[in-house]
Length: 346
Image 1 (tube, rainbow, N blue to C red):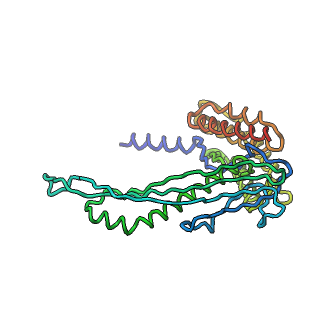
Image 2: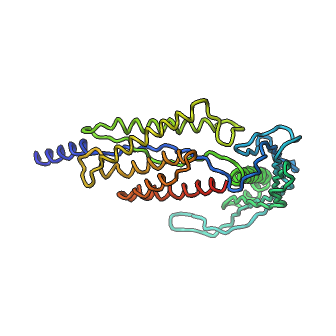
Image 3: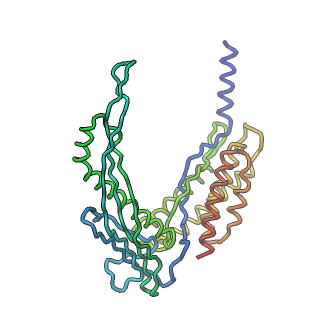
């Protein structure tokens, strides 16, 4: 028994002395450039949702083109965006359904129940007009969207008829509402994917380090600095009508660069301490991949101004020890390739 206690104690002390990543995720903010940029002279837009049906309520719905200024009036606007609900309709029907009705644990009989269906239909159109340059960017007319409600089996046919008659209008209203919300969100996402400047995020674990024997205050400082840059960047894109490249306060961008440079220096110095295949070391196999991942994230944020993408890819290529982090590096690399492609096409 004493030997077992001694062994457990040794293992516990070994774990205390061993290096651990203690990684925590931070949202890496990145600006997604448009896949089909608008003309350089486009600065403002006006959107309108036209509802030609009395069966739908659309007052709180809106469209938003990120990176451009929305105007409340149509006169002298550069870009006109319209979503038009042409018509909505629905039909419903009841089906009889035979099921096995339980009498007792060993006896079942055939019984008649039913279910009812409500099928909703919506016809809508999407338009984007470059009024500044007299160009039609999108004219997508007469799009049909369908959606169906299935009541599920109701074990009494007369009850099925009653529920159908009482609830079909309500189900149709809900189906139409869901369809219009989904369609407008889809249109808005496609609008910004093609023409907008949207701030996106990619979550990555950032190493902080943990272990009684070693001091990881430098890694914690780098973690806090990167988190501060992430939050500061998010704030610059938070408000409606933000500019294409964010509304940073005075000195914010310079402070962000200084903090990123400090992160890079800390992580590069930590990498120099790396000792492979050794548990009792400050920077070992459990931490090294995170350092390269985090370096790639910092270099990505710098690449927007420096146009230096090699540092991003070089650090990702050095993530080689742990399968989980290798998968994270591959996923991030795919994202970086997409980001760079959009910037190069702008």
